[in-house]
Length: 199
Image 1 (cartoon, rainbow, N blue to C red):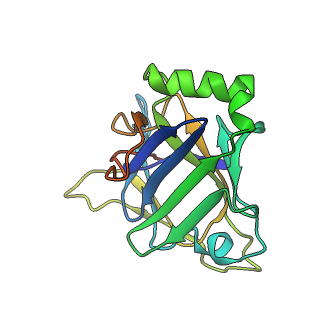
Image 2 (image 1 turned 30 degrees about the horizontal axis):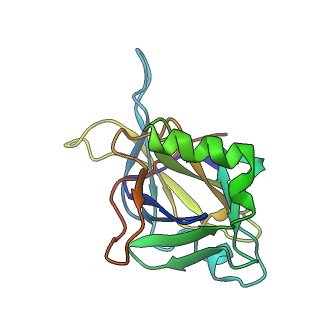
């Protein structure tokens, strides 16, 4: 499974005994996965438009919202309607409603306290690249334009999204979570994820 995130937006709202989480994962936004260290080349990754569309659009495929990529700490899920996803060419948008019963769970209380304290500051998607027998060109790898640098750039055209996670250390410093009192006028904030290149 791959994890990470690109700049986007995430916002947490509280209302009575409930909380809702909104955010966006922007497509076509490069993420620096590695600076190359002392001797290697930098690595960057781009998720192409509707790169997560397959599992998002399939009504029978489950996608979870988790804390720290742990399926032992779920917040919402697609198939019961608590996690709503909408895919566009620009971004994957989501809204999650945390059940009132869930709000009593210690890990959820810890999560909300961490967000309020500014310690949980990002969002990271967990996904897999489909096998070649299913999608022949799910990803491409190329050299960066020499005028811009010397990075190796992987572009993911199609990926299987299994979960989105709130994390403490996003790949981009701009990726952040904010907790606010709920009001009908509030809109999605900004800053979100990036990605990690895993073999």
